[in-house]
Amino acid sequence: MSPHAPYTCSKETYKAAFESGRCIATHLCETQEELVYVESRTGEIAALEKRFGVWDEAKEPWGGHPLEIVLQLAGGVPFIGVHVNYIEDRHLQMMANANMTVAYCPRASEYFGHVHHRWNEMVESGVRVALGTDSLLCLDTPDRISVLDEMRLLFKRDHASPNVLMAMATVHGANALGVSEALVTLDCGETAGLLGFSGCDTLDAVLTSNALPEWVYSPKAL
Picture (cartoon, rainbow, N blue to C red):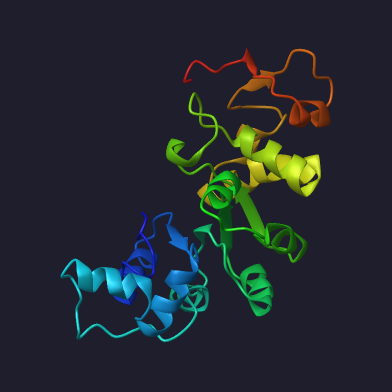
């Protein structure tokens, strides 16, 4: 279940979502404009609502940072926060203590000018960070949508550890969705499949190349 974002959904909507028992994902702290609107119902989002004739004078601002309020509403229920581009220092430990996963979409954030994402600090603080892709509309690979390309960007731009990137692309996402880690690790039992890269004998080589993967083993379900 996915309540869109704090600037489009009410607190009551979030409460109902967190009480539903379903896997929850929500856009969170995606833009600076969101922070302003949630805090005070002013700024560009408020102006847009007025321009389109959907401004509700009776609607009260949340009166705080969207991350803090959503964490409070969640009450420990696990959820996925998508993007989380704008946080403050105090939020790192709050997220680490919460049952929350950040779904970071590096290429989408870069495309829309949301630079200096604090994903590395999140990881170092104990926050579970998984990789997302967002949509084809903001990607530089119009022929495909793949977490591999997100890994490659972070490896080249941020000099990220290949092992950290692999966890972000596999087990962290599986944990967030309540899926068995066995599906995305080399382990006995069920697996989501195995990909290989010609001419690349290390993960570093895969991440520095533009090589496309080929199925080594593809389950019938795929």
